[in-house]
Length: 227
Ligand code: B16
Ligand code: MG
Image (cartoon, rainbow, N blue to C red; front, side, top):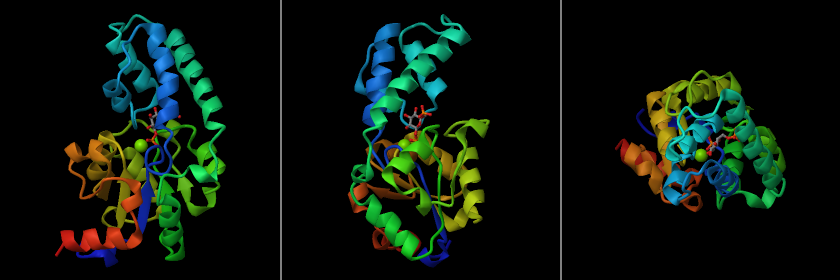
């Protein structure tokens, strides 16, 4: 990549990048943690960001010292219970719940004909995009149930690149999670990290929060990087 003119498309994580669903995931997982006897704290909550539903439950069971105690059936039950509560909570989401600057950013990208796709670990991603009323901005959403591996494996970002039909080096991919930045870098795409949780994974581009992200700000950072 030489400069911003080689960038042809964008891939977005959803939770923590486009909208703040983390608070709803936290409420629902906290309840499960209480039920299985895991001490809930912010470190545990942050570690579940970008992690699939079953992997999140396994992490909570590990913290509770209950590794291997629950049967597959009981684990499915707990995961379904969490998802039900989560789905109730996200019913409140509407077009005004996008993170600061993100509506403007995807609007700019659409006006400039950049194809976009979604690489979210969430099986609720299409519901959330519908509620935000932004589904038609994206060429498509990767189906997380068809994946063999979760983030930090690159599979989800490779599939999201196929949706927009571009080469890895032509894509900027945006994430708020450590595992997500690892996944983007392993896919060979340009990684844009939002928030300090991404710093340890050394994103190519970094913004403190979504309000700083715009087409011109991204172009400026890329051009500085490759000067
Ligand atoms: P669900 P992202 C991730 O979404 C969330 O950050 C993570 O906390 C959640 O467990 C995961 O989706 C699965 O979500 O239970 O709705 O399928 O950040 O990859 O957009
Ligand atoms: Mg995320």
